[in-house]
Length: 336
Image (cartoon, rainbow, N blue to C red):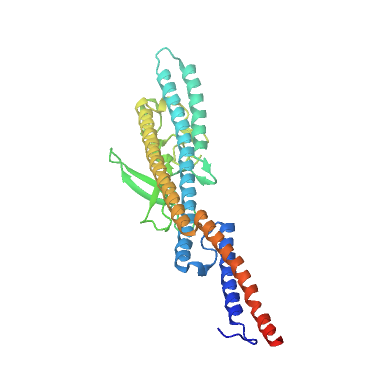
């Protein structure tokens, strides 16, 4: 090997090795300090791309899950109102049963009717219940709301077991992170109060000068919207039935059955949303695991690599110092 003064090839090579080892050591230190296997995009471009998309989907899935949980809360509040409404109608049917007691006089029946009137008014107020400003219930005259209005309000109809056409309302919850209705969605009902509490034909045995044929127990409009003659004494000025005798027991039983059906539908929707929530929770766990396999550093492996690189940096530093001594050897030879 030749001995040169102007060019110290050994020192140059040792310095290059030291630079490479130092860069690798710093990269390993960054990984250990951050806990990430991919600190810079050039560490693993393909892996970083996949991890980025997985993380984005994970965050969307989490947001969808929050929406589903809010939908469950919406249905739970709705069911609570329906349960209270059912108790009211059950109490009204109890009053109607007591009112047909042969030992009850006119004054007794009037007292029952007073409670009946107040319970009707309470039902009317319950129709207006909302969840975060969003109506829990609807009425047949309501209109559908299309995007971009929010929340979207779907309107349709169906035929019940008695051949009656019922107006149905619902809102759609998207249950997939793609935001496409075909990939995943659940419709939750906005119960039609008018259909549920419609009494049908009143009991004409107790009516005078009456020409109507149907009524709505809840009167969601709070008005004489059905155009009954208030002068006949059938309805009060605010549109409620004035006597409990105007409604037969069979009509109350029919209302109770429709409330039971509405609560059953509500429960079915809650059950489905709970299943959706469980699926989304599982998907989030799996997505987070997939993201972690790509991005998270293997501490044991990286610690071993860090120790090896640390030794290499120290060794390279020592060799650079040794290589720099070669020039002094040449000077010693010239001095002799």
